[in-house]
Image 1 (cartoon, rainbow, N blue to C red):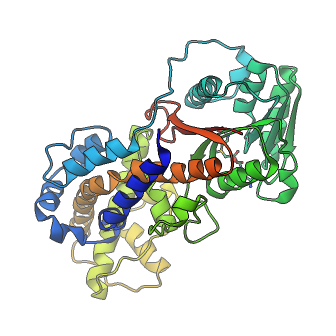
Image 2: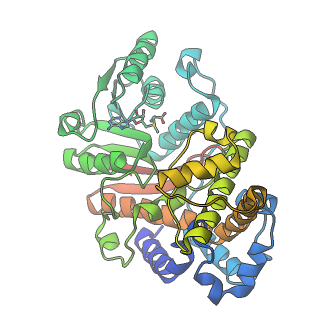
Length: 398
Ligand SMILES: C[S@@+](CC[C@H](N)C(=O)[O-])C[C@H]1O[C@@H](n2cnc3c(N)ncnc32)[C@H](O)[C@@H]1O
């Protein structure tokens, strides 16, 4: 696979269409791109909430007015990566999967299977970065009969991990460490096969830098939460990405995370209600203040949705220290909030086309940086998207 060419093609395409994925319909009554593509905007706006949900989880959007079908086709082409996922048929000792939720255990097995195939030979020591209880590292160490080191900063998880490793009589050390601090980096050794499953933003970019600095033999990384970074704007790693015209904010970096496939019915209903109510509040504040400006709304516990819509809105107004006169008709405002949610969800389908391409762009920046640092690197998908939307895996070997 010619990854530099793919990166360049993705980079050009994402930059060319920035106007379509940068704007968030949630914060705008009308998006600027709607002026350029009125037919598409109208088509999207007339669909129901259920239509939007179905489209997010796979309904065909090919019948939409252009440019949506064409963008979808290009997005698929630019995001294609090898599929390393396989049926999980092997059985393991019960203690290996003890305390692991079913979905997580499947992800761990899929990750382990994919690395087995991609690494020519495992290194002589497994290191699990941001390990939690170390389930992934433990499975790999047990499979390959290797010693294990786990780094994790939550002492409760460190203790629980230690106990589980002892039960298996593994040669394992679980260290309570903040991996962002240099004291943790000395644990990385050249003979290590380092694994990290769903390590967020700075946690995994720090890992990449330290793996290269310390010369670790192998790395298998599935990143998560690209937006969890100290830096306000994305700091590219590779030379190619440094030349890009894309300047990504934390909000942009959250775009790849916006898939909802794994949310359950109840969670989805609560999320919808919370968003519809916020959008209702938004209509109210714009109207009363006479300003076409979005006001960010703070996150609220689920219990906030048990109060009335009016109380919910007044709470938000108090948060902004606004003394807004009540609307003429609260139920009508609530209904308008739900109508806007329906429109927003459908308009977001255009933005969603760019979700995976942007994630691949980010993965390729990591891949190219490892390549330029002397690693042979592969990128693939280790499990189905329905098992985890964060299913991309970088496997590198020095
Ligand atoms: C998304 S979880 C992934 C855990 C595990 N790899 C898995 O897939 O089950 C991220 C883990 O990183 C840990 N973590 C977060 N910040 C950390 C830090 N600064 N140093 C070490 N661990 C950290 C969290 O406590 C959590 O266990």
